[in-house]
Length: 368
Ligand code: GLY
Image (tube, rainbow, N blue to C red):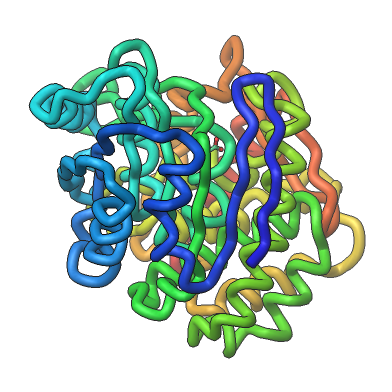
């Protein structure tokens, strides 16, 4: 078991990483917050596997439990889903001393966190991430939110409405990863590689050397990975809780990813879109002469060796993708701000990336 402390102005909390730790959820909530009631917001995809353990743990710790389910689908990451959580909270009579607990992937955590941030102007929130991606990234840092329909209504703009709301506890149980869809596990590995590129080159070496054990969700390998990747995330959010500076580096690959992941015909999960985004960001850095050393091909090989996409599954008009990136929150006064890597462990925030270079980067990830 390891417990990593997060200190932010908006709240300090522990990230507990414990194989089998799900059984201790109720007693941990009880000793930390002593609520009379919990609303458990569960990811629909985990209902059969781990939900009964969480339910039993909360009930046997003496709290009244209300439950609702959120479908882990980008199209459901909407204000209307947050309203549905409010309805359940009201029906259960949740008051300001009670708490909302999310169990599942990042999407459910973002929705439940936004509901916790705004219900009664804010109630305590606990994150129980059950995907690798959520354990190492989405559950930590306090960003919560939902997508909004873009003008025209056909596409969703990612996370355009939300709040910073730090959880009171994050409980990650790596043993649950053994039942995770292998595709989701690979998505989490993309996010871990991103963390390595940002701040821990040895994390990339670890993923490369332990690749097969990680793909089998070996508990020792995944626990080590989660702890190391979480440390990168904590270091960044502690320095910059509200994305006023350093935190922006976490967007490495994400501005590209956001332009493709809501395109339903591409059928990409977030981590898969991030994988393509990492390749595109690296290609853009190469185009600008920023890359030091010859690691870029190795990164592409590592992602592909894990089974992650390194190009779009279907061709898309690069000009349209560039246009879509203009709706991203990181566009300031019409200039694109992108995070670009120079070598594993070092990235820079480039404020004035021209659209011709972005067009070139998209061309590098078109299907051959
Ligand atoms: N909740 C994810 C983050 O704050 O980065």
